Length: 264
Image (cartoon, rainbow, N blue to C red; front, top):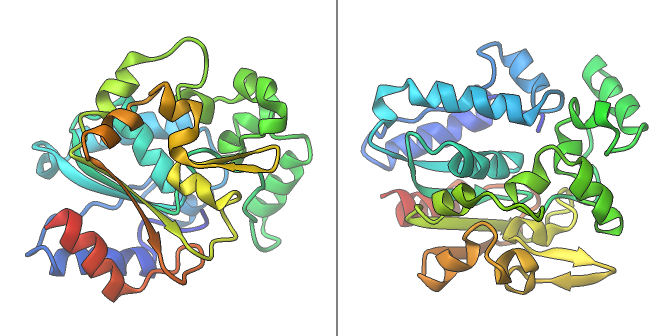
């Protein structure tokens, strides 16, 4: 959110992965090659349409055709998980997400500043997250999950309710594709105040003030997307980035706990 595929932070991450994997090919997902437009798409756009574009883009990259490891930062986490569930051609081997919002958010991450994009986001959100115009336009509304209005969420959510297979009609392909992963690796930032509730990064939720860990949710117990299957097979890993706020990543920690453990 608010980042671009070519920002200094993403470039540093890409360079670190290359240098510690013997020069592995690294592709940074983008919606536009224009960095300013790419940043705008992190706030405004239809995640389903953007995902369809990324599915097409990745299918055309020769270096990825035999499969690849993927890492999603913040909202990129559930975005790449949706790629696995809906497309997965070329296939993902190991999927790592850091500070993702897998069970949605109950509070909006802020759009900082008074630029036109942020003004538009704020004006649209005043209409309500489940207003159809907002759902189709504001990215953060598309993973807003209000357990106090769960029926409304199930009916109106155009992205999150679908990729979590929460509706009565289940998509068997979503489960099949997620189960094809070698590992699903989820990290929560220990001091995260951007993702609300923070436990969403680990597929947990908060209902009526009660924290429900991932393995006590209906999504897990009824195995709507394959999470329990991965866990039973020893292919689900949950971890915490210690003493870190949202997207505060120490590169030495990242080299040891992500690159070395999952990509080498």
